Image (cartoon, rainbow, N blue to C red; front, side):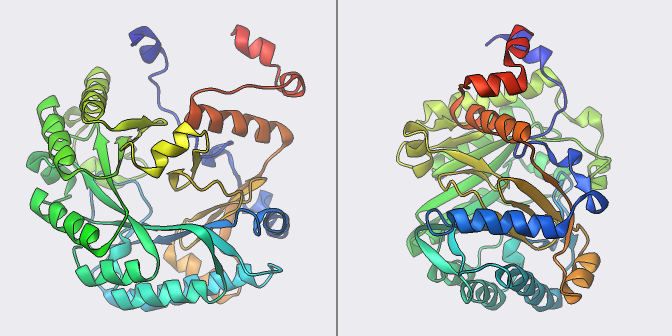
Length: 402
């Protein structure tokens, strides 16, 4: 490892799940919603029948606040919010389907949050059935959802499995009781094991664990313990994310001190330790922050160079059109991006007015599209190459010299 190179580039930066990244997108005053629809329509007509579309649905509700979390969420124990939210998400889906010339063919569908399993089995079924009423399903479709490890209702697992969901992602983060206390995220190994065993017995073909390194109070000993327990449970995939300390975005992160966080060097050591342990256990490193067993489809997609990354993470489904539904969701037409409003109140207002609830976005220039391609190549395959026309467009000679 070239430590001087790591030190040189160890500065805060965005995850390049898009280029340009979200902070550089224009506000609604600079973003033409009608032009966004035209971009969606053009990509849909070119790709729906061949590759299908991806669909992301953001379900923002959580019963408890996790102090580390920077996601868009709403904390409540009032489950009466479920039905009205589902109704509006389905209405947003109708707003898209109404201007598309054919039924969307869904290649990939993901429930994110928030805590999707906050919703009852009945409301989750109502949501997915409403979506599929106006869509077809690709014969290679992948349906997945995120779950809190303590959301161990077997009924929900069975309901979602019967609706086509075969992939499950559990937000484990860390098994250390001290770390869990500080970040207010509690789950025992036994609880996680129960969910994993239930899912496997039902028939889920892939289980993912989300783990985070760099959390407050984490040490080499606690990471080693977390990774050991993870290896024993043997998920098919592991997302090993770097903790992002952004207290100006997520105020709950102010509930602990920066003194509780590992230093830059210590944080790097935590990652290297986890990576070494996972690789010793026969997990294959995928892209920047994922690991998978050799038998998993992600590993196979690395081998045949079909791995792709979108706003939902690494995926084997390379679709050019991704529609995001719900509060704060992001959509991608390949030539443009759009993000939904971030508050539930504003989302409700726009949906009730029969308007797409977008509030910012970006239309990609030719240069944007070329740079985006190379960033995706580097994130997925660790290599890229360019032609003369791209070199002239981007001044590659000067870039390489620097």
